[in-house]
Image (cartoon, rainbow over all chains, first blue to last red; front, top):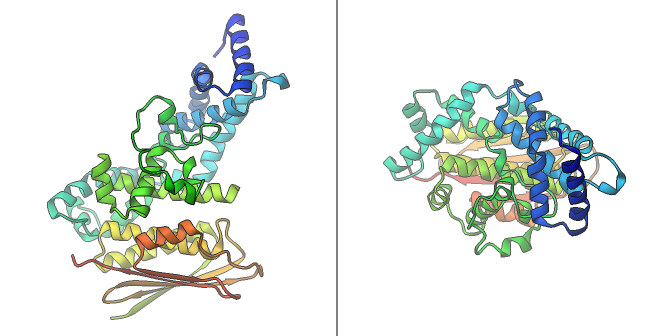
Length: 250
Length: 124
């Protein structure tokens, strides 16, 4: 993570320009230039029960916060400032997700298995399956199915969906990585209802809109977006938790 | 049929999971589909948070789950010690509850705010 003198100076200047212009391209370059630091710090928190990929995403969110909040005129090195922010984000992840981290691997795996199973049962039955039907098909008890459902809400499956704080209010890490998203069409009026919704990643905004404003079922949303019903369920739960968290902070 | 289950829990979001899991278990007995159970879970979150706020408050919430022929009725009653008025439901919460519950109401008045939720089961 060591830059040569010239590159370091270049990045300093870029930070000064970014602080003035808030230019998206500069922001992306600054994030990209320091992503190695996020990965390095994420690895230091490895083997504590969370997948490394998730930790890298959490660390990346910390890095993005650091890039957005860094004030170069204060004379602090960015790496010092960012390390503090990223480690803070990783610690907060473990603290906030205390219960989540303790979800047994067996339950995480069952949840993932059920994701596929529920989709095929949906197709076979032509309707959403009941818990006894899922339990029978999976060869597990009803209690285990319910536990796996609950585990799915607690476990941070795809931190890539986590919103990125800062100037780019509607963006997500996935979006900032260049993933195309056509889900912003026709969803304008929900923003008027709650500006907090606008802070969610576009796909989560879309799902909230379809479920609560247009009254589509989770299965209908799943088939429209090409994802599983249980994934829709997770994203809904996460969105509502995020809205609540943001409302608390306001 | 009208069996009833009661749960008394601290008015703290940490314990909300118990309220959800109880509802899920009972709904499963009533042959709710997985999507209906998910709706129920969302509804309980919204209504309990409507009573206790997002950070919780000193006191308790009593949950009463009634297994009806038509579905599951959940009543919540807060007993709080902070003397703070109950915030109730936001416009967004109301909208969410309209989508996920068949009937819902929250009365934030007085020392013992209450809510009621009815989730009907579809004919499986």
